[in-house]
Image 1: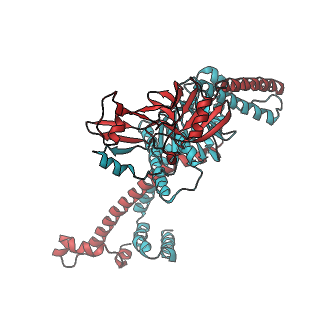
Image 2 (image 1 turned 180 degrees about the vertical axis):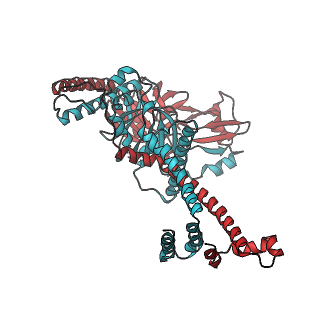
Image 3 (image 1 turned 135 degrees about the horizontal axis):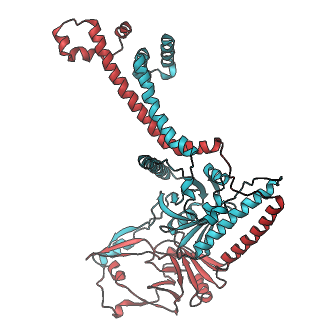
Amino acid sequence: MSTANSNWVQKFLSIKRVNGWFAQAIQPFFARLWQHRKTRIFFILALGLPTIIVLVLTVVLPATYAPFDDVTENLNTETSAKAADTVVKETEPIPPDLLQKNAILKSEEAYWQARLKLAKTDAMQLSIDLRDSVVSLDFRGVSIQSTKIHRFRVSRAIKRLQATGRLHPWLVNGFTLQKELATLPKAPIRIKEAPKDTIEANETSGEELEIENSDVHFTWHFDRQLTVLVEQAQTPTFVGRFSKIWYNLRRGSDSAGETLFNLLQLKLPRHRLWIELELPREDAKAIYRALPENAALALRL
Amino acid sequence: MKNSVMENSSDKSHEPLQSSDPESQVDEKPPETAIAKRLNSKFIRKATIISILLGLISAILTLLAAPFLREIAYAVWPHSVSTTTASKSAAKLKREIRSLDGRVSSLRNRFKSFTPREPYLIINTSANKVFLKSGDKILHEGICSTGSYVLLKASGNREWVFVTPRGMFRIQGKRVAPVWTKPDWAFVEEGLPIPPPYSTKRFEPGVLGEYALELGDGYMVHGTLYKRMLGMPVTHGCVRLDDEDLRIVYRKLQLGSKVFIY
């Protein structure tokens, strides 16, 4: 068996594709590894065990055991009692379109309830209506900008939330912005030193104004595990591609950091329920800059 | 196994071992088994380090991919459905839908009642655009200039940020042929000495256009001499409009009218 394995490894490493520096570097190592039974077992265990542990702790357990406990835990019992979103235990056949209409209306009721609640506050608010594909900026109940969503994607975990009857209480109170990450600055401040005299002032007054042309990609982290990802509908610029890579790396490291933080506190990592929107660049930029810290969001699914 | 190790001429680890090992220098030709043992222990150390490193890398990659893997898990794994709902008949559900429908339209109407019926102004500082609206209807739209986001630093740790404030404002004053009272920063920006508060040097007629609508705290919606800059963020916080747009806005908006800036 060992010889057969060794032959297989030798064959694998001697095929043309892996010839060259790669094969030269790893061929002797793996050939010898296959001859040492204990080392081979240790190698496989050391390679596989950490991955399996991470996989179980960050994927299997969070996806299996009560993944949305804290999504609705702070909501009152009245709204929780209304949690019957989609599934009805049937005593007689109920037409599926009735069930669907019921679910849509409940989602819409939650959306308008949230929007009305937010209208009473004195700050800029955001409303995302995925049913009509519209994002609106509201101030005291007045919709001051409406943007058509080009495309959107929704996390499958939201569908799971719907199936477990927790969608209505999740939506009904609106969400609060907690953290944001973007490829563009929130305020494009430019520092200018005051001129010493009129001659210097005249020299600097003729300077061309730089037109801001940065690509727009940003992430909003709201409470109750909601994340909204906004991408510009336009093709990214050459420079924009690099900033997007950097932005994605930061997003990935943030997510990994959050997972590690939870694990260190002996808690299961929480899965974020995300919504990805594609908006025109200028509208996305205006919305990003208009929304203040701790802004609220009303969502219709 | 030993033989196969010894026969492997491509193993580079053989050479440094011979030269660095003091024992091998004393005995000109050390026993083959000792060399093989040393080679083995060196290989095991190497394999251990490589396997731990690869294991860690693989674990980190799994950690980074965890959100995507969880998404897949939610898509493919079966899940229990809600059983909290009481049994319902089709007739009962229809009644509930009718009641829900009524509640939703009532909520929608209540929300729509927040939108002013009288004319109001919306200013988009990001796109430098202005919209005059009444209810949901756009009466007029045009371009404007808003705050430049310049942070002006002067001697004595004095600094000003030229940003158009965001939020809801009301028209607090309407002026015809307004005269600009130049603030300190206007002199600092031009490299001029700052005159006393009520000096005649501070008053400059004609630069604000035909009309000005006061929003409070010195911010205004007014005209401009620099029409080619319209559509760009170049002001010190005020909102500049083209003459024609300004005329319409001035005529339509009354004292107390709402101005939304975002």
